[in-house]
Image 1 (tube, rainbow, N blue to C red):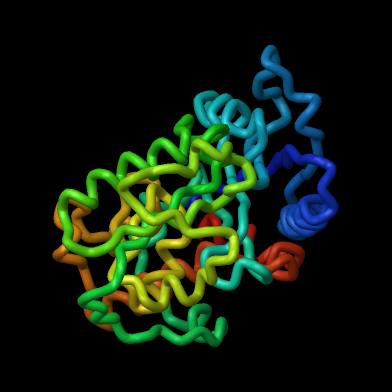
Image 2 (spheres, rainbow, N blue to C red):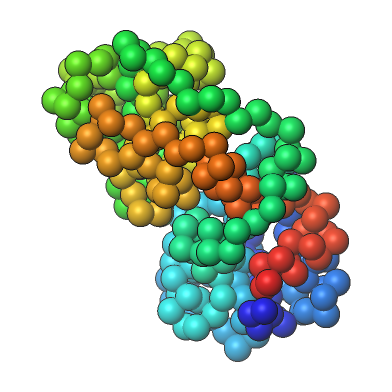
Length: 287
C-alpha cells in the first residue's frame, strides 16, 4: 500500500458540476482522517507555487492554469490527482488519475476483476470487419490541445488525414470534436471528408473500419464497440490496445480475454460522486 497524503488541496473553478465533485472528494478525504481545503483557480497566479500545507493537489478537467498547477506540484514532490469525465459511462463516472493526466503507466500493473466493468451494463461487441468502410480521424478537444498538449488539434487532424490517405485505399473521414472552437479555415482539407454538424456519431463509429486519435478517450468507446483503434500519443489510455498507425491496413484486434481485462482494469480508474463521498475512491488510489 502506498503512503496516503494527509493534506489535500482541490483547485477549482465556479462551475456547479465541479463544485459538487469538490464537495464529494473532500468528504471522502476527511472520512479517512485527512485534511481538505479548496482554493479557487484564480488565486493561483504565475508567481504562485506549492505551499507547506499541500501534500496532494487535485484538479478538475483543463483550464488555462491547470497544467502549471499540475507540474508545479508534481515537480515539488507532491502527489497530484486529475479528475475528468469517465472513460466508460461519463455521465455517472469520473476518471481519477494519480500523478498523470491519464493513468497509462500504472492502471494495468495489477489485473483487476471484472466486477466494476460488469456493473456498468455495457456490451463488449465483436470486432467489426468493415472491409470497405472509412477510417475515422477524431481529434482531442481544442481546449485540451491548447492548454494541455500545446497542440493545434485541427492542424494535427489534417496532418494525420494526409498521412493516412497515402497508406490506404479507404475513404478518410474527420470528425472534428469541438468544432465551435475552430475557425472555418481550420475545417478545410483535401485529404478527408469533414463530417458536418449533423453527422451522427454512433453511425460513423458503427460503420468505421478503424478510429484514429491523438489521446482522446473516444478510443475507449471504439474498443467497446468493436472498432480497432490507432493512437498517436503515449498519453492515450488505450495505447496498449492500439495498432501501429504506420500500418492502418493491419489493425490490432486483441482477443476477448485481453480486451475484457483492459476494460476491467479501466473500470477501476473511474468513480461516481457517491464513491468519492464515501471515501472508497480515495482509499482505492493508494492500494
